[in-house]
Each structure stands twice: as structure tokens, then as C-alpha cells.
Length: 276
Length: 198
Ligand SMILES: C[S@@+](CC[C@H](N)C(=O)[O-])C[C@H]1O[C@@H](n2cnc3c(N)ncnc32)[C@H](O)[C@@H]1O
Image (cartoon, rainbow over all chains, first blue to last red; front, side):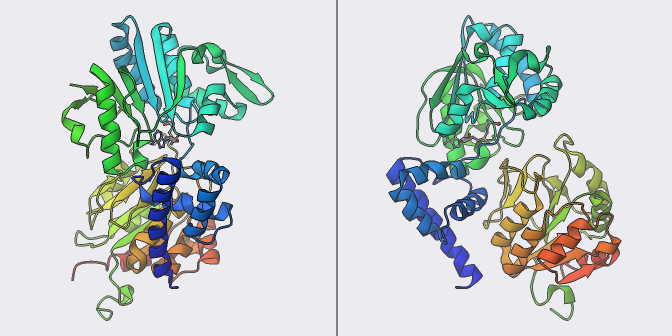
């Protein structure tokens, strides 16, 4: 087979694989952005010693534990605390005052991965005295990541970077006030996670589950094609209360979305939107 | 066509993917300065800089270039004669449908954006209509990607290591992938500027 024929076969078999996964496991990756998926499926092929995507498909379909492991390749578990510090500054300045006007508020972190963003948001809410009246839904489709998020334990080596970002984000204390160190780990205070509900929820297949005042969905939509982006944005729009806020990743926007007219973008570069 | 434009080697180049690291700003400035407004290919650019340097590259490079210089935006269509710069903290990839894609996948070779990630996706998307260029740099990013470009039938140019501020990256690209041309920057600028509308 020539190089090009091999590549055509790759894309063809990849489509079949995504169909098969959907029918066998109800995980829908059929509308994910292909460029990075190709790369990660190639890595999964290497990991499981498969020479073709169809060989990988055979193993995924017949060995559920192989599927569970390949989920680590179909989803990208990369996160940090206070990623883009200016975003969290903007939350303090813009969103918190809005939340304060309610006796109780609900917030939703969609695609929370291993929970770094949840801790970051909880810290902001705590410092602004609104954590007590908040309920945070933290959702993802990766059960392993949700497990890490629930535990709230991270390698201590990551704290230097997180704490620099925390301060850049306008943190008023010291990040180390929120965790204790043990055996090379930073164990975050249970009180930060007391107001959090962790749940399995897919932006590709599941519907709205609650009304919320704020949705943060960062660095998830870049992994979707436009159609799936629109689906997810539709779910957020439906979930938001009147004048509720939506926050996206620093390189995501509503530019290609049908919902651009129903959400206004706040000035600045923070990718914060408000329901009209 | 090959007589008039010897660098094409009988092919039309639709996109040029460029990777640069330490010493890269000056090198890129020199290359971009040489490009006339009639330059045809799209230019996709990964330069290693810390994630905190928001918008810096576009700001620094745009004044030296006759072509529009933009930060790459997720799902944008690739427009010919436009320079796209990978945003700091994100990998830049390109789809066969000629649209850009960003990702926050793990760093590759400790880098995000990574040159390998751009090159491998571009090789897949453009095949022989791609030229890959590895410039000065102090790490080994770009070597595997350049190999992918060559295997897909694309062209590979590497900055002459002895004239690079940091020779490690060009050297490792040459070792791992080889190249169609090894060029000093000024030569490379002249050759690149030939990809113009006839
Ligand atoms: C790159 S992480 C982003 C983590 C975090 N929001 C941040 O910005 O640091 C992307 C996350 O999206 C999740 N994800 C992927 N597809 C999803 C879907 N259909 N529904 C919900 N979450 C999804 C992945 O499992 C992964 O945890």
C-alpha cells in the first residue's frame, strides 16, 4: 500500500471505529475534531500493539477493559489550576457580583477533567464569600478523571505553577492555605469540595439536568466539530437562567455558532458571555 | 513551470509549515520580510515561546511582513498568502479540509505548541503540496514532523546548522529526516520568495 492509500484507509477505519464505539458503548466521538483524534488514535494503536485501526477496533469491541483504557486517548485529560489567570480575575469582577444577588446559586463546570478548574472556582467563590450558598456541578465523561477530581489530590510538584497562577488571578491568600502536603501530594481541603456534585454527563449525548447561573466550559469545545459545538452551546443556553453567564477557553468563541445572537460577549479578552 | 520556478520541483506548494525555537524571532523576521504580497502559499508557524506571551508574536512579526499575520483561530479556513501563528499554550494542527485546529493535548517534546504536531497534521493534510522548514532552535522538536512531511511526499528545507543561532534543532532534523535543501537564512528567504503568482 502506498502512504496515501494507508492514510485514506486510516480515516475510513477511524469512522468505522467511532461508529462501533457509539453502538457498543454509547460514547459518541463521531463529531470530534479529527486532527488531534488521529494523533491520539495512532498512539492508542501503538500502546495496544495494533497495526491498523480495525485491529484496535477488534480489541475495543471485544475487551471492555481495552475500551476503558482507550478512553484516555479519546479524551484529553490535561488541566491546570487558574489556567489563564485573567479569566478568574474576570469571574471575580463580573460574575461574582451577579451571583451575590441570589440567595443560592448553581454553577456548572462542563468537562471538568481531573478537577483543577473546580478547585480554582471554589477558591474564588470562597474568597468572595459565596461558596456557602453555591452548588457546583462538575461533569465529565471520563470516570477516571472524575475520580481524581473527587479525591482532590495532586502532585506537590505542580503547586509552584498553580500558586503563581493563583496569585496572578487575584488570589488574596496563599494557595498553600487550601491544601496540606503529604507524601509528595497536595491534598486539597474537603471544604472546597463540599459544595461540589461530580457527575458523568456527556455534552454529545445528554440533555440539560438543571438550571444554572454560570457555566464554565473551557478547552472542551475545541475538541468538537462545529455541529457538536452547537449542540453543547445549545445545552448551555438552555441551562442558563436569564442573564446567566457562560465562560469559554481562551481560544474558543461563539463565532461559528447559531447562538451568537442569543449570548452577548463581554468586553475584554476573557471569553465571557451573557445570556440575553 | 519547473524551469521558471526551480524550487517547486514540478509541484505547486499550497502551504509552508515553519518551526522555530531559540533565535527564532530574528530568523522569522528575516524570512517574512522577504515575502512579497503575491506570495501564494499559506504559512503555518510554530515558534516556542512561554504561554504567558499573549499575542506577542503577531505583534512582533506583523510590521515586517507584507502579508496578513494572524494568530491561528480554531476552525478558521486557511487562506492562501496568510501567515498563521500558533497561539502560546496550544498545539496548532491543520485538517485535510484546509481548516485550522487547536488543541491543549499534552506538550510534545516539552513544547506546546509543538512543531512535530503541526508538521504531522500538515503532512497528512497537504501531502506533496507542503513545504516544511526547520529553523534555529535548542531542542529536537520538528525532526519527527519533518520526517512525516518527507514521507508524505512534501519538501523539506532546513536552516544550515552552522549559520543557526542554536544548531541543535536543525541538526536533529537533518539527522532524523534529512532535507531537500540546507540553506543559510538569506538564501532561504530568496528561495521562499519565489512561491509567487506567475
Ligand atoms: C482538555 S480537558 C479541559 C479541562 C478543564 N476544563 C480545563 O480547561 O483545564 C477536556 C475535558 O473534556 C472532557 N470531554 C470530552 N468530551 C466530552 C463530552 N462529550 N462531554 C463532557 N466532557 C467531555 C474530557 O474528558 C476532558 O476531561
